[in-house]
Each structure stands twice: as C-alpha cells, then as structure tokens.
Image (tube, rainbow, N blue to C red; front, side):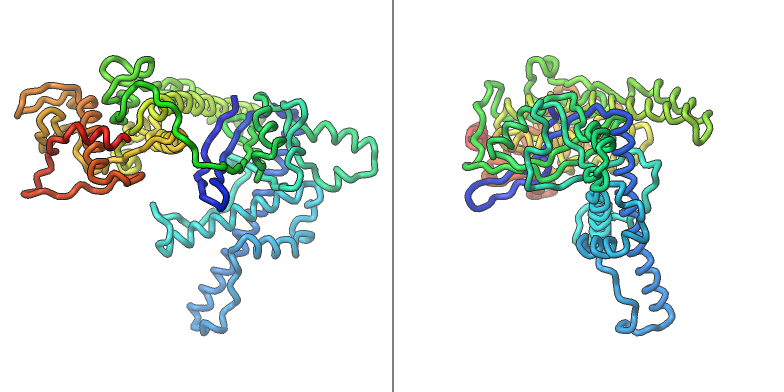
Length: 483
C-alpha cells in the first residue's frame, strides 16, 4: 500500500476545497536507471551550488564595497534571489558552465535552482523576523557525498503519461539528445530506461487521474533509506467539505501524554493499542539496532576513503536507517489512526522537544527515537480528515505535577519518580497516567471556554495568588465540547 502523507496545503478555493497530498511509492531501479538518476541528482546539485555561489559572491562584493566607503547608489547591482531570475541567469550561461547539459533533462537544473531560491528565502525571512521558529543560517554548498538526493519533474499537460498501463511502472524523463536521437540502436536501448518498476501498485492514483478527479503537480525521485522512491504531488478538488467519518464507540475525548518509557499514555485505554492502564509500548526502533549500527560504523572507519567495500557498507547502513524509520512510522501511524478515528477530541501537549533533547545526550537520542514531533504532525492531518478536533495544551501546564483527583500541585517532581503520591488526598497513581488525565481535563476546560477555537490552545487565565490548580469541571461541558 502506498504511503499517504499530507503536504501541509489545504486551501479553500471558489467552487470547492482543494487538497494537495503526496503519494509515495518504492521503486526497483536497474543499474542503468540508477546511474541515470544519480546523474540527474548531480545536475541538480550543480545548479544549486552555482546559484548559491552567484548570490554569495555578490553579497561579498557589496559588503567589501561598503567597507571601503562606496556610496549605496554606486554599489554593484544586487542579484535577485527569485527562482525565475536565477533560472534566467543560468540558462544564459548554461552552455559555458555546463557544456554537458544535454546529457541530462532540463528539469534537473530547475530542481537545483528552485531549492537554492527557497533556501535563500528562508534565510532572509529568518534574518528579518518574518519566519517563525529557530534561526536559519545561510545555505551551504552541497557535496556529492550528501546521503539524500532528489530530482523533481513538472509536466501538467500529459497527466497519464507518468503512469504505465500495467499500474506497476513510472515514467522517467530522458534527455532530449537521447529521446530525439535518430540512431535506432540508441533509441531502442533508451526505451529500457523510460519505465521504472514500482513495488506497490499505482492503480488508485491511475484511476483518479484517468477520471479527472486529480492532477499530478510534481513528480520527485529521491534516494532515502538506501532505496529509491518516487513521490507524486497530487491536487484534487472536493465539491463539499469533508464530512466526519462515523465515530467508533471508543469515547468522546482522550488525553495523550507522550513519553520515553512508554510511547504514549492514554487517559482511556484502547483495546489492541495499549494495556489496561493506557500505556502504549515504545518500539525503540533505533535502540534495538544500535549494536548493528555501531558494528557497521567500526567497519566503515577501517575502510579506505574511496573503495568498493566502503560504498557497500554505506549502502547497508543507509538501508538499516531506512528500516528503522519505517518501523517507527508504522507504530506512529497505527496509533494516530486509532486516536483520530476513535475519539471526537484528542488532547496532547505542546512539547518543546528541541529544548528537552538538548539537556542530556542519551535523553536526546531517546526523544528522537520516540519522534514526538512527527507523531503530532501525523495526528494533525489524520484528525482533520476524520472531521474531529485536536486540542494542544500549553507546554507550561503542569500536567505531571498536578493531582488528577484533587487538583493539588506539587512544587517539584523529579523525572526519575515514576509514581505520583499526593500529599493532600493520599492518592497514588502512575505518573504518566496522572498526566494523561490532567491533559484531558484541561482540554475539556479549554473547549468549554473557547468552543470555536481550533488548533493550539492558549494560556490558561491566571487566578488569584497565582493558584494554578484546576477547578472542578462540569461534566455537562464535555458533551457540548465534543458536539
């Protein structure tokens, strides 16, 4: 089955709702096709470095002129960072800087130019404060040793030409010099490079495109996890807003507390997903393969820098990392499907994973293995597809320090203490189970006060004497919040 992921974009257009999604398929390439794809990725890397070099040299020259006292109006003209301007400049000098450009498809150079323009725009927006999040540094030149390689193709006129009638092959664009050659021997040989076999069937995508219900915006071939894969960016229009799917009789609301010892703890146990206390087992995909990774790293360190054995070992390590990522994704998608389709409201915490991971090295590795941020991303679009709601509780809410029975708040609760013992009411409960119940109660309170609020919940209003304990919530608010 193809892997379906939401590509962030969901805009409301005149006449219906347009949704953009990505459909990924693993491909089985021949040695000749792999050489062709690697040459395409190399051309994209070349154009990326060329565009970045042009902008960087221009910035250095203008900075040197300013230091020497040259007036602003007399400075060297600035180079435009837009992809259209950079593409026009590259096409003007392509014959000189890349005389071999006829050996690859023209889309390869467009891929590198577009990626360079986007990287420069992100750096500029981050520098000026228009981009949220952490600071983005100036882009760096790409090396041929970069593990992740990709190349994109755009062709909107011939939609079905990307897919083979057998539903098990994807078309690869060939260079014009190879596709239009008059040599019959070369042309027949090139036909073996056109169609790349896909391991999964593309019949669902083929049917949507054939019926005119979807259009392929972009096709990207990438090398990830030691395997080549193809990703289709598909856009289709919905005549009406998506209707909520029939709710399973699991509950109206559930609180989810992410962790390391357990992948997650649910306020309401789900049969087949967690145990009777609500703990979802953590697969620890990376931890289970650390021994194999260490052995591979030791063997790679003993090899010569450029040798066939080193290349083989690097490929084995990449495939092992790909296996780890797929195992982790399988668990995350399984849990997200159960929560998004089984509850009308799902409440999670707004965790600062980056700050948590920077405290200790081993804790950071365990947090990365749990992939809390990736789970939130997956859960967000799956809940939107089901027509349900996601409530994100503020990160400063003391879910672990608050008693879920009486609402008393402890001043400190070290991480190694796994049982919450309340000194006020005497209740003793698992730390994670207590946090899951508190997250659920806080989500009910937020929904009762802000019934139309979507997405991330705001800060709780401050009470007298800075009392952060929760007030008793009327159970009737739950039905109104879930409706």
